[in-house]
Length: 258
Picture 1 (cartoon, rainbow, N blue to C red):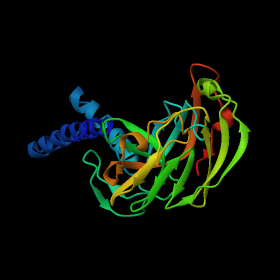
Picture 2: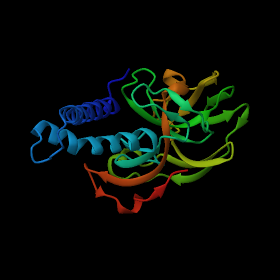
Picture 3: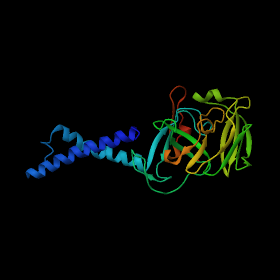
Picture 4: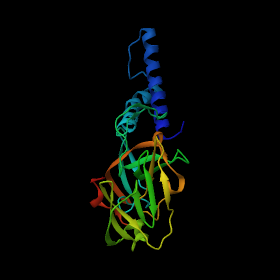
């Protein structure tokens, strides 16, 4: 069990709910009527906070969870300072804290932007793009991606102009890539050395990469993402705040991710 924010939300819900419920049962056993003017202060706090933390727990566990982009590994699609909403039910309904899937819905597809618990440290959330599905053979050589022997078509858009904390990527080549019918932007540096290889995706796992191909700690370095580690699919930028440089970028607010 990972003691993350979901665990503490669940714990807070349990404590406040039990405290309030126990007090009501004691009153009932005594034949007394609830009077908020006479309730102990601890019970008052429990009664006030229980519905709030319960609603937050349910929304965060089953509908959508906020996520902040801390690095430039998904540039130019996602920038440092982007705040995202992650759809928690796209890939199935999971119980909070224990992360056990109880309802199957959809499975990740090529090109999905997914948040997952990092296989090397499940307490840390990562965000990358799904490149390989179970059974796929993924190849990456000389900056060229291929899926099952079919190269992903690339079209150069010229030199990239970085902004904010991503300014160091100015001069990288900006391209669009067609990943099995899903077009998205990537950045590469022709003079940079990054991991290459051929990867077979085993059953129940996914191969992921960052769009910033030469500046991404992804599946090329540490392997596959087990299906059980998936958190959800990123779908919406609700805020961008680059606190070290330009502040709030209102143009990015409301961007729908594809």
